[in-house]
Image (tube, rainbow, N blue to C red; front, side, top):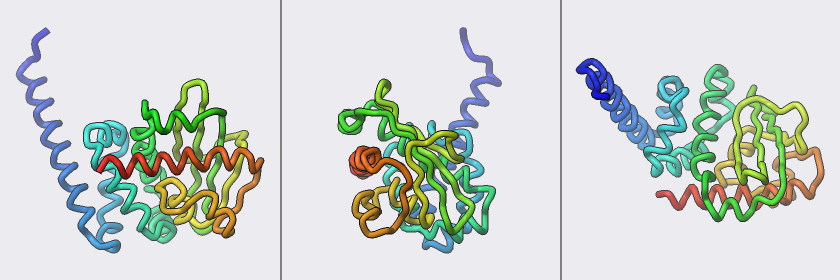
Length: 205
């Protein structure tokens, strides 16, 4: 079926807006931390609901997003903009999901189900990650699960660092950068998965 003129115009306008948004995101990476945090709430609001499409169509953005988020002071940002915490995690986990989807290096690390809750102790940010062995998938997002295998608490920047790769899960635990409630065995199985995810994300540059 052929498109009408209005449908073609709408599609064209969508692409223009999308390209403009991508350009603004890329330009934001060059800002210092204060400038980035000033524009981030508006960018996150525009990205909301389209994060997966954004990172899939622009895979090189994933590593830059993870790099900048790993460098940011997360707690002050979330405390000042609590409504954007879920949007922040949507973008963060969209990047992780994109890296994990069909990635052999990640799938080789997945050999059991693991459900984890994250809770920041210095700002109102909670999240979760689920590893499903049958589907060899890793997903996550805002909010907590009802019955996790592991609960992790610590400073927000450490929790984000566990996802972005700036904090090594095993070394971070040994150095008491965060606390873990649950079977240590599950935690040691999760660590190589998270490490591989961050390594593969950097490989998209």
